[in-house]
Length: 208
Image (tube, rainbow, N blue to C red; front, top):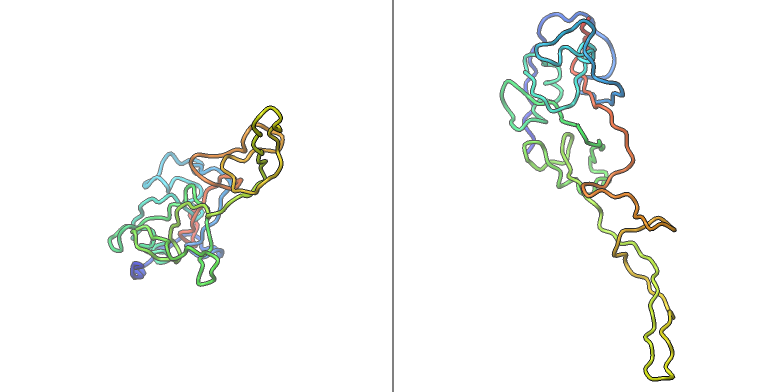
């Protein structure tokens, strides 16, 4: 069951500069390093010291935030990524190491959508739900030789390869002409990828 939609708290104090752009709660990839704002020696809380924060963005690392400090973001995502549905704090989505997938919304393109789970453990197929690793059941066919048995006695024919059969593979597939197997991982199945940060917009106001 999804957590109830939270009330929208007031936005604290006047903000220096409003900028148009993506709505609060939008997630995009960021190809740079998360670096301190020039001249800043630290922040309270620490994320305040980054250049991203001053531009209205936070890294999606699952950290806990106060509702009173991030009312716009809380109004957008509420307790969707938290383990509880109440309290004066909420969690950012933790997208470290994840690929993102569009919500199925009844399209049938996510055939296992009914098994997706929210952070609090409830089964729900919508936004913010998690899906574990899986490999679709399948077989790979290949042709292998079958030897005919050798005959008996002094005039018997020697064994020979007389036919082939098609059967599922039972070992690691190798590169053609190579004795080395294709690259595999004992931990996951994955496509070629490049690592970047996922960041979330928490306000439409820029700190200068």
